[in-house]
Length: 417
Image (cartoon, rainbow, N blue to C red; front, side):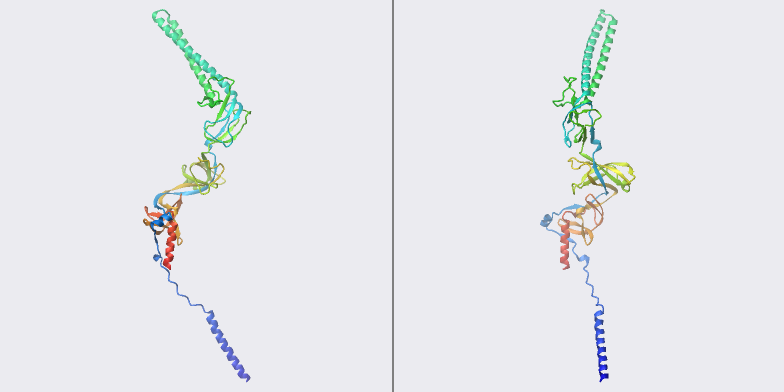
């Protein structure tokens, strides 16, 4: 009985082991590979989009021709806005004197010839006196010349009639010569002191005088008021005197800057030095005006490099008629360097990306466009070079081209369904 139970037990264990092995084999066996799904051929997907006239108007769709243009490389460097040093004036008084009034304030915009200050000038009083004396002496010499010329004429007439000796005529000729020489001398003196007056007080010699500025006619030595005038249109940067102070010609009274043009000093790396020439087009951007660029040109390239940085200083002139650019602003400068060759370009807005590929939409008819794969190249001033994929004269969609892309993707999803 015991032997029989043992045999049944062994048979049961073997059966269980076989069943477990079969189940384990089914569980561990790798699944049969599934048949690959059929790929949708690329060529059957839609590549064209046609719009109704209403849709084209609603999309704001615009187009532009593919053009061949000279290509330039844009070099981007940093710089700092500064004064136009050719239009920066440090104004000293032209004569010693006492400041009577300051007629402008720091930051004020002034016009050329506008009066900045009035001085009680000591040298001006002396110049007025000397000029008046020279004018009087000139008038006297001219009168004596007229008298001597008339006397000579009478003597010549008397000599012809035999009533006067020839020696008297010669004496009167000598007197006329001395009188004419005196006229020349006093005329030179008068012009000298006129020039001195114009230096000491330009307003006094000008045609437009303020009521407080005494004209030369009737001027007296006691009246020594003169004006300091603005040499050009600009802004007052500094005032170095106050009313009542005694100043001399070595004292700076005003600093004046013409900010209608500013200089931007940029640092150009040595590797880009050969590509930039004076006159190259530049544009700058500053943090104060996001998205706005200020155009100008490169006016000067330094003849030596900074040994510490290996860069050359490039001076860019930027028009600043509205005064938006302020001195010491940090600027990002873009300099255009011609490459010496031409290429096909399209506006940046024409480029879209589909299937990880740059594309444009070429116009086939008025409101019909087709996708075209391209190979882009350089970018310059809102334009992108197209190295392959387009021909000159073809027309591409620009503004609104992303809507064409969306419509093409939508139609593709419909085709796949």
